[in-house]
Length: 342
Image (cartoon, rainbow, N blue to C red; front, top):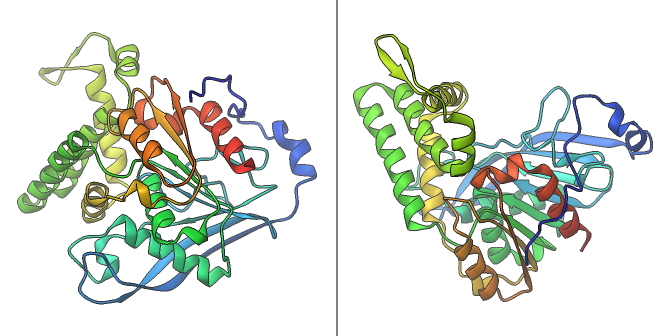
């Protein structure tokens, strides 16, 4: 099934007046930023550990909870709370597709291997167990839904197969039951760049370079052609290409907020991820982006076809590739809103 409808939930402009009417009648909002000690048996560990799991629980008092998780660089700040901006504010908020006047959103900070007593690796199953532990601590027997994008979709699949009674519906955006080998190859190169930098005592340049390579996989070829098909400029004794300046800036920005060891751990976790689609017994809404270079549409078709529960597949064309969940709030938001109403 294809979703090519017009943007039903287009992003608002920078003013607050667009949602004044909604906000005026919205129920009181509660925002809890906390941490919970959760007992986890790491998939690649040797013994149970107690991990400190940080979470955000934000939205309408007493409303159904929707779990939201994004890519490996996403934080628990999925929506604006206090003075903190959210990474998915165009989708999650009062009057948005995931309407915080009707729902309460829950999100955790992903665990890295070091958070689990330094096992060999961290898995999507470990993240799922961490979320289940937070649900226990908050007294939530069953969340209304889990909305996951990229690595978050993988974690959602792990939760749905390991703890199916804990969520009513899964919305998996650009994340499949396993990593595609070509995507794994690209991430393996990124990890080798970082390891080389660690060995050479040049961690930050290596992390920046790995991020630059990653950025080339997140968007579609059409967008790169439209944005960066300009002439090179001669500076500092060599030519600089428009796309090169973009990548360098992205690398610098990433280094300022992310740790190399954490990146290594979570990048590897993507490639270790594997669940059996036949074990998916939770109803699912699956979104594939045809220009996604990391998660091929065929993989998501296979996931939907093999699911043991009803799985609704939607395919969209987007110039933004894997990043469509961040750059297409209208189309992605329409899908999320529809899934949450089911």
